[in-house]
Length: 455
Image (cartoon, rainbow, N blue to C red; front, side):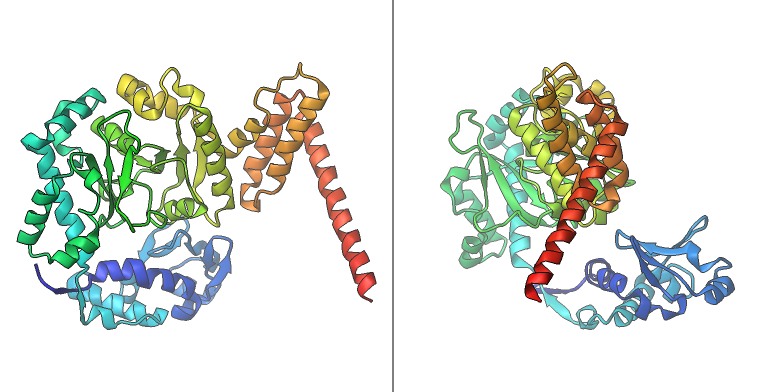
């Protein structure tokens, strides 16, 4: 193992140069006359685009998620690297020269492309430790874990390639890591041997988009364990992508839709059955940044499928709300938890009825519509007017706060909730519109009174 290596031009271009270039397209490529629009940039220099591309400027765009080039509507996309290299997609040293050119246009330091950088020893030790865990699962010591996985419904032929491991004893782990060249201080700082409860547990590697291990989880094989999941101490999961996303990103053509579930093991059960577009939260917590991350990764839609219990329904509602709060998000859909019945979660469903999963996905509904209907859950046209109007008002208050990018979803939801509550969509729309103008008028009057007092 070497102490240092040269930074990857591909990683540096993707992680550092492209985001900065996207923010500075107008100065990086002034010949296009780039102007900001709602989704990114649109060209305005008709003379240039006619002469070079043969199209009107308005047909040339560079839209989010962060693009690797520009697109001519009705035509082809051109990579920035190819554009600065004269048209052909550069390879090898030519690619590096193109990245340097683009970095300078974006005002990004090019020195990291030219000098050696220290190896990330913590990433290395996590990789090597998890490799040891994979060996442990296949060895005699992994028999209880293999039996557990079979009992949980993982096909026996899939266990060897399921991407899981078993935590070895501290003695075995320490001896192997020392033999691999790690110091005692590096082993201690990594935390992989810090918790005696880890030994014998099933474990998995939580990776970033590039496939680099950022933390490791360990699950008890005992159903009644006080603490089912353990994570590396000091290793935050806050800024990590959903579990399993690195597999989705690197394997074959990227799917348009990704399914978001709760359980980490759920991902492995789906993958064992060749359903490979599933990622996990590792619980019920989700943040707006998760949806922004998936949008930047290029997914067109997200299907949320959480557990069939009240906690799962509440978490689904929060997830849709956070997606609406995100600055950027793919279209969000929801598989109503009741669709999984009698299974308690997606994991159990796919173990028992994997062949029916496509039809379950087809049953999904717009996330905004689903969330609005939750405000009216249990309400029917036969209920007293007070209950129906209260549910409609609660849904309307949330719908009214949605950003403009969700206007179509908002309108669909108003109509569906109105019918659930026994009112016509037209009456509900008039009510919400009247309330909007009334609230706006009250706000203006309050502002006038405040100004008058100040004068």
